[in-house]
Length: 452
Image (cartoon, rainbow, N blue to C red; front, side, top):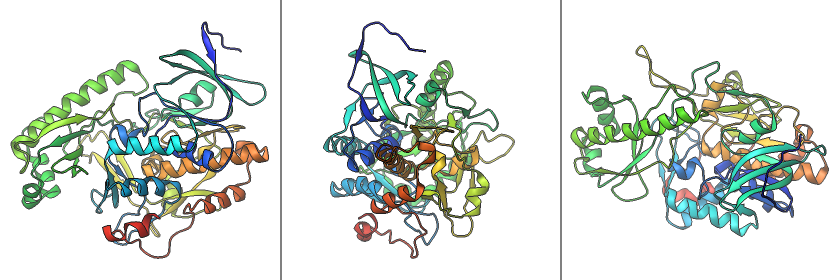
């Protein structure tokens, strides 16, 4: 049925429309634009790109496998982002802490500018402050998408669409099937991250660092909502960033619940500030200088794809011929933590420690012209808890952008494109599709070796 709106502007049609400029959406748009002459459009509801990478976090995980012999398992365009930051002196490697492996720490404010620069250089049509509100499927396989921004209502028709909205907003409006987090297993908790300045990191580390923090969190009489969490040095001197707040049992797709989650997350942040100031060495004069732009949401809608990644596939540590990227991240499930249960459940990938993720996980069932990337990709709860690191979501985006170009140029439906051709394109783009032979060199002096 044709949607009708009053006072709606019609924008020029595009070949490839990417909805959401998070790390996966930026990669999808860049990958499509740099490998073709097609018209690519990228829309984002916030006033800046990056999604979780700039709204609430400051570390890329997933480039390296955990453990004492890390392998670098993501490459291609994601390396370009890291190299841009490195050239500006805005990164350092965090060691194998908190179980997730070596992390690439960066300045999130600078990353906003890097994402902007890469997008604008590529010739992508780029609209910020633009929210998808409706979708109208056309009979020829194209989609008419309705947006709202400060200019009013507008519509654009796209031949191919990549849903990188996080909450699968496009797939929801277009009628694709999905599972909502919490329907079968409890949804992972939400987190408001916060940053503190004027921290004496030398005193903190001398007192025991993360070891003493864990002990103090367990022993404190302060009403902490969570007895686990991390606090790590930032790219800015004497500043730290945390993943400590925990808001569970609320639905991030319900506006009243999401409002409660936002207010509760902010409340908890200042409970933690008081705890840090009173009890943690090096924090007596520290204060919160920033909260995440919104509460961090780990999972909402997970679209049913042509393939659904499962825990058993992750734990099999195999790399099928249909793989489009690799993952070595453990299952990291942030839980309610009732009845003495740990608040974060960890399970590591056995054997090689790496598995391949099939192409079908980014294609909605029977899709002709649509892909989904980021945290709305097709996976069970447990598998999703492993494969949601930002290096993996960037790799998804890279693959989806190339797949959309291939679909257009070869007139192939999304669900049946020739995966061998796609994998060849990924190889040419320097993506990593096979288990690396030698451990990666992750010292600062070897940075260029790892990310060229």
